[in-house]
Length: 325
Length: 253
Image (cartoon, rainbow over all chains, first blue to last red; front, side, top):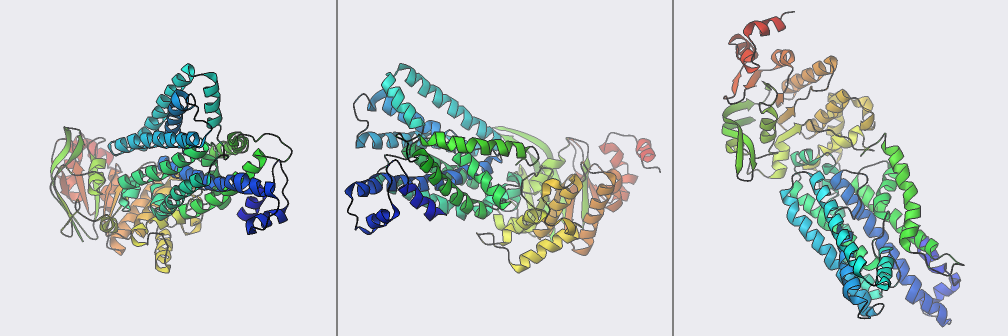
């Protein structure tokens, strides 16, 4: 399924590229320079970005849903993405754009860097507080409060910023898989894959924590360490995606539910692997829809994931009446 | 197996403030003993159970299992010695009875949680012991409170520990289930030689099936004795601030 979606995502777009040409380009025998450029410079990086995002967000969302035992938790619930957007807002609204850096390479790297710093800042604050908080509900509320504070600061920055800068910032918040360079993709991959492996390594502990922290402790789980591990893993995944692709919504929250429905299990080794498979496919499909053939513009990826994601959330809520997490 | 509590005080520490709930606790439980912990609401039964389970630290004194100190015990080792059944509500979607009971094998499985044939055997046997064999692959959200309580007891059995702690295992259950749960626990102490401590408000049942009762009263030392002794010396009545005639009347059939 993934290879098919991957190839389709590359082939479909406003410029049609036949499959033979794609094979030629990959094997280095392509003669059509335009197609070569479209594939290697535009479509391939987008498809790889879709794979990375589709891998990272569902795992991050699953971790948060397990930590908070709440079906509506998503990768951003601890305020990681608002932290990132604060970083971007400070960078873009207060400096980057007015210096004319955007959309140069330094501009996009600066945006990613600022987002990473913002996300890391929030994660650090949450981690410092986490050991002193006894129940996860308090942690959840604190995360949401941080989200409110940072988005309020972002609002203040927007209020005083030039309309053009606000527009650029707004585009960032809609998320985009485009304009991510190969180097940036490599950086993303370096964070995403070890973190996903880390999540798989604690699958047994994640299963146990579903019984609640007390039962998990009595089974021999180091609940404090596990909580920190979950926060760090989830925040890295959410932070790295937000930094390079913007805050992409819905995927992180909904995919784990789809995996639960399809596989009727709560075993994390099954859920992690299948969430990734479903997430990658869905991101590739969403990316295809975002750049449907015949359309001039590329839709922001967030609008597409929301149109796909929202109905799934509604179904979850309907079913949730009977089957609350 | 011998579970020894010496000179122990329990309570909560919040910042610099310490709230002592009970102190000078001197108790012992041996294999094959069913002990009921009784006392009025708020006297500290749950705190004692939580402390013995290691869920919260004792404020002083020591809790030892076969001479090993609970506080310094390795997590895995502790999980192989003590299992608990708490009042925490379990509602995990898409989870079967088997899944929950299988978590009892946590201290024995590898990092990937692979269940060996031996593990599977113990899981099925535990489910059978609590009489839920027909429900093994049912979703736990479709079970009644009584059945769910038995699932958690099966999880404790699968954990295969010599010592089981239960916090109000009969709460929220109807008469039939209360009796069944108590009889089941009694049977376990006899057949598998486990040591079981449970807190309960079921005076009649507790006095009938327990080998000994612990009576907890706010601000007073913990008392222990056989059910008969405790009835006869009037300690049960005192624990609930009742006169001996009131108790005698309530126990008259």
